[in-house]
Length: 199
Image (tube, rainbow, N blue to C red; front, side, top):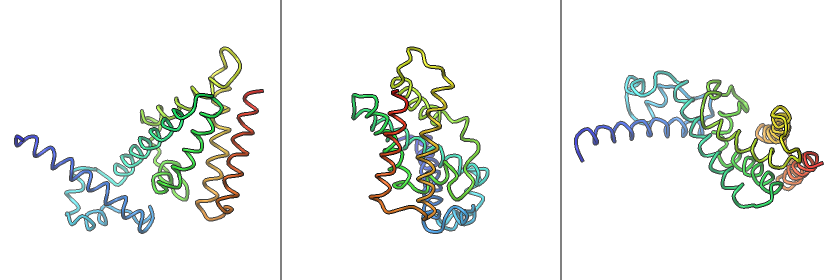
């Protein structure tokens, strides 16, 4: 390995260490506790070294948001591929979304602003467009109209998202029901919306 490759590998490792340390701090103390100084202390670097990789805490939040969307996109795509019927695909995709929210709670909080301010720059990320397209295309396939109106597809998507995200948020701030009740509510909501789209 040449010196340029070695230097690049070390830079990539340092950048990954910074992001890993940030996520570890958040898991231990919450998003409000995250600071550049705490990250530096966690990985035993000086704060100026952190600033060589990320100009601000917002830069770290943006990169973590991007990583969260990559994971979520893969989970949703994998869930869709398990089914052939469109209604089952859509239900599976939203269940995967639900599972992601609790398996990767810190990412979900950052991406969607549960109990904190979410990263506003995410609108320009290709990772968010990929996820939206997965859902939009599946909803479009489910609709009976030959050429459904884009506004109608968008409205259906936000109907799903509002209900699922609302249920997730209620549970994340500890006001939800037990898991069995949550699963019943989730499935009832999904089946109800899917049935409505199919009519």
